[in-house]
Length: 524
Image (tube, rainbow, N blue to C red):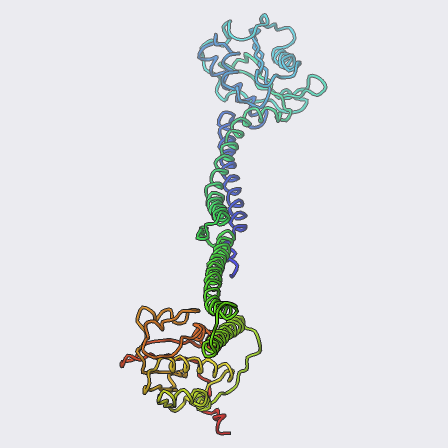
């Protein structure tokens, strides 16, 4: 059985399926990641520390211009709760705000305060230190100055400072109506990875788990479920056959290795079923043969034993003619017993394939002549006419000459046995297509239709139906031997009744491929 195409192979399907699944998972994961980063970008429009500080200062200036008493701590930590940078806001009125999500360095507010004091000189004071809401801003309700304010640059300049070892920041002034009311300080250190993980990790984990479950479900339904169903069918079929159900078969759907395995298993099961049936038939035939042999052998043995015991009785006085008649019966039964045993051995050799069988051209005319010579005495005694006919192209057959003659002799003996006195037996040979047909036809009473199908069975006799011949019954093995010989030659033998009620047996043998060029052995 050929291997399945590579694209239908289970291994390729699994491999390509998982590659496609991983590609889809990565694509979906990438889309989710981009969405999350885009969302973070919306919440955090300024990316650099300076831009972020300016964003905070501008936003705070606008809020203070509208409401100077706003709770700065609640407003800033609520609005910028997803930021990735620490910040500190110091106001002139003493309020200051520190980022909660990412706590700033301890000295960031001090640095911002120093920066704010530097804007007004060392003699200017600020209000008492407070955090969050309370206190009115110095700017009132007026809008911030045109042009806004900008973060101040330069590592040593007014926009960037360093308050201690490891702390660096950028600054932006909170301006309301042109007046500086506070200072925003943002660390310029890299964004901490923990913050990104804390913000994006849960969403990515949920998506990853969902994709894993979805991908596993799709793989199970599309790849493993059909395979599991067919493997389960194969398992059930194997168990059924093991339990004696020889007709069980597995599913053969699909074109992968599992389908190939199922087809191979079903072929094995079919072969096993055929062999089981053949063994059952052989066993039944063996039992029937033993029963038939026992029956056929018991009849002559019982007769021999009965007459021998009768002649051995001392109180039974037998005259000489009776004694000779008994001895004749014993001799006949012994001969019959020998014939039965000889036929059984011959049938066993033919059916078992024992011995060497020749394969050579055999003259049909010679076969017919030897049949005539063997049966000539009884033909004369019964005044039976035996005629032969050979059509063109049927002069030669190929096979074992001795076995072919044996088969033809058995059919002729059967015909002689059932042909009444003054009857006729017809032997013919004809070429039809690629076969040579040898026929033996008699003018007896024929074979009843219900017996035709069993005439070649061992020990089967229809003599009770073909009465009026006066010929003793045979062993019941002659036609079985004929059938075995003909099958060994690759042919077949059939039985039928003729139009004039006689029986006709026909041997059909394969014709030689060049029968016309093979010379008749009888003429050489």
